[in-house]
Length: 226
Image (cartoon, rainbow, N blue to C red; front, side, top):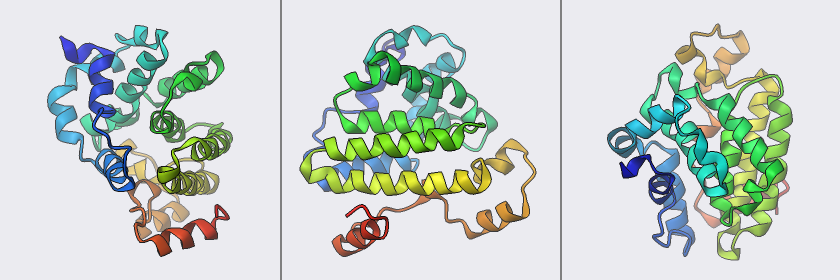
């Protein structure tokens, strides 16, 4: 079945449709993926892939850089759509993070050409809770800064905003040591500080990126990124 091939995952998640040619089309590329737009397609087309990856049946994909990238998407992004609002959505986070960290050591990460491919690897690392989470967030900030330097000039401002986004996630991890918005799904006790944070609803993963040039510039200057 073609959907069980890494190429099917990559063709779906990273289509050769020219999304990188303009900032507007590239912003749409990110918005669709990060705001639940892919949920229906993943649930219909990639249920078997998502379940097989979670069972460890696709681990052999990690033998090549692009196969590993497909496995990271199948373990990190697909479960969040397939098992949305269920504990299983986060069940593969540790394994995925290990795959990405290993990729940084064995050359698979550097072998990826597009900054948006590498960014999804870093997103997976930022998703994973654990005692070394803050250290890993520092690594994500550092790597995202590098991606901004390597991004095409006409897209660079989006990857500067990605630094800002990563720093916001880091601030949440620094405050709470985890992602509090998951507490209800995972049946965890919520602290008083987390209750206030959740009530405010200002979650980095639900943030709408500014599109007005003046607002973008103000955001980046606030973070010292311009």
